[in-house]
Amino acid sequence: MLIQVMLSLALLATVFTLAFQTQAATLGVASAMNALMMVAGGTAAATLLAYPFSKIIQSAKDVIRAFQSENDTEETIKILVHLARVARKKGLPALDHEEDAIPDGLIKTGVGLIAYRFNRKDIEQILRKEALFTYKQYETAHKILYSMARVAPAMGLAGTVVGLIRMFSQIGSPENLIGFMAGALLSTLFGVVAANLALMPLCNKLRDFMDQELVRMEIIEEGILDILDQEHPRAMEYKLESLAGIRSEPATEVPALAQEATQPQRQNG
Image (cartoon, rainbow, N blue to C red; front, top):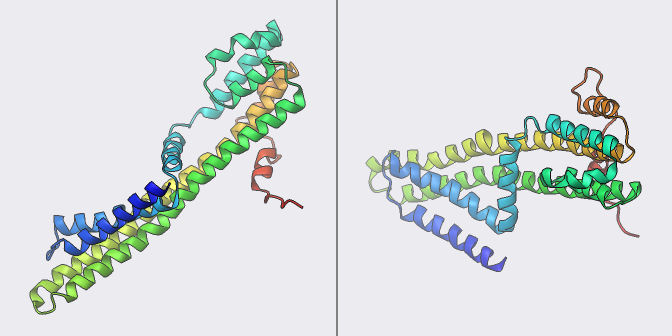
């Protein structure tokens, strides 16, 4: 982490050094690249200074997944119903042969717990803890994106201040002042655009994905416990689709996982 802090500080120093040294007396490619360097480089440096690199990489993966998860809930229900049919027809031990065909995630964990003969209470607790861990991971990604959205306009303003300082150094050449002023304002423009047209929409998209994942993980927990109880697959499918809002009569109860995830942590003692 110390190396990352040093690298982020070096990046920040490089960005400001280049911003002061770049000669861009007219509005053009050079001034645009200088403004972009201030906003992008400064935001990246501030993010690297605040968060471990591994969390930043994981956050990028979570954002990508948010755009690839349109049919995840329906696919999850199909997998759970299939597993319920296998368990009802061949017995719970038969799920051991289905585990390898299931992608990594909460469903595979639940099937493994059933296959290893965990009791109902332990399965429920383990699934709940893993689901909450996953949700906290998404919360970290959202926090990082929101932090970047706040830093970007500030770095844009800093770039504008740098441009104004360089403009005043050319006070003896009035013909250059307009060009320096226009170039200075580009940083503020890029910072506002990056925050409000890129980073904040990504935050909102990730938040919507997190809400969907809360419901999906609740469905998985409910489905795994129904499989353990060997409930009828059709009845189970109807219940899970109602919980997901696919049926015309959706479940009205707030998912228990959502309640637990939004409750403040209790202080010890």
